[in-house]
Image (cartoon, rainbow, N blue to C red; front, side, top):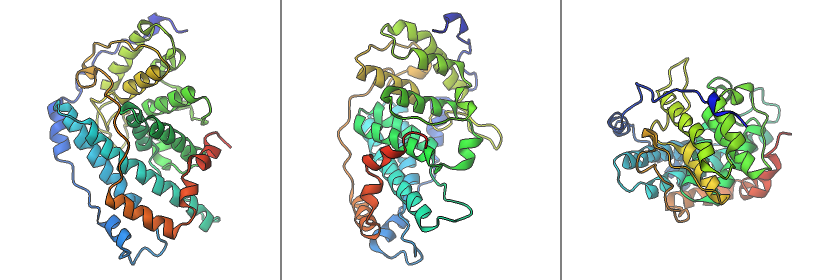
Length: 319
């Protein structure tokens, strides 16, 4: 077990975005059209000769709903249900995209550039959000799906090889450690952050005070990793600068293990993020999602099987 003297002293980043800055940014987010999904459902997408599911509509739309939910939280307004709605779109987009990646490689087995279109970063964030919202079954499914994506190289190449999101690999490694039956052969950058390595070693300790100093260091690190990406410099938490999903994910998993969580006196953990939210109700698909499901099942008779947990589980460990 690592010694407490090894904890780096970072402090809160002086240039950490304020709540007002983020609210202004969220309000300026460009809306995303769902016209492609509507056309797909109505079969008026005449250019779509391959019957490609409209994941490029549902995913970006869900991401924008997530920003709106984060804005509500930062304004101390009810935010949980709005985030659940966003998650519904995001995870459905992942299923559509996953099924298309699988079918593409069957249709074009000798293609010189096999399809790699899945955003493993956003998928990992969605996994964490599902757990935070108390949707445990959905969180487990998403964690396994993300591992299946990585182990079949469906993930976007540049984001996997160049951005080095240690915070996101930490969340997936934490999930894998909790489940015990998921794994991925990570590049070396996944192990570069001593704070996360210490937390992964100790996250199941019964005494929450043992973990507390490391979690406070992780909170400090979050503030230093909350800047907007540039073309050459990438940050772990650019997508949620003041939303501690990685900490709340750990809290939820400890709760599921019957362990108490420490109380963290840190600006990142200010309300409403000072405690886990109440578990939310199940996903309720809207008419747009139901319409897309109806067509994708008609066009691709293997859809339900491909995205089933049973099929996904075949790929949650490296081949």
